[in-house]
Amino acid sequence: MNFSSKLLENAVAEFGKLPGVGQKTALRLVLHLLKQSDPEVARFTASIDRLKEDIQYCQECFNISDQATCEICGSFKRDKSLICVVEDTRDVMAIENTNSYQGVYHVLGGLISPMDGIGPADLKIEGLLSRIQRGGVEEVILALSATMEGDTTIFYLYRKLREFDIKITTIARGIAFGGELEYVDELTLGRSIATRVPYERNVG
Image (cartoon, rainbow, N blue to C red; front, side):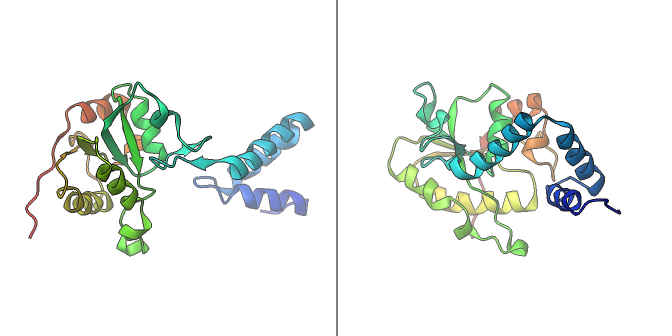
């Protein structure tokens, strides 16, 4: 693609680094910004700057937050004895949209994937174990995507969690293998949470 401006080319290149954004889409976004007023563009860039400078991760569950403790962990209405373990913030948002879960969360920050060089030490697993060790947790729901990486992570977590006197469950498999939680419709995801089942597996 030939550009009439190096500034335009650089901006398109940066937008093109975003996931799912090709060069044509990136060009369309940049041209749209050029048509906006200076105050509108200033608000856009300021929001990105603040996102990087001010965003925090909840010290309890590691969800993205504006404060040291996220609104979910800080709410007295949430059931702190029930922890739903998810891969990332997108999964928290997907489950919250079902309006069928009133417990709290624990965000791992990824899944175990040896092919990608991601092991247990790269995830927020120790934080989860520390929360359980403090007491008050009765059930942990392993709500991870139905993928090879998700199943591997569930199996690893189960071996760690079975040392505690808690109930360990996993979401019902109404979700096809290979499916990621963020793409599952709200009705199916809500039903999978509500009809969760005990996770049991023979460990050698």
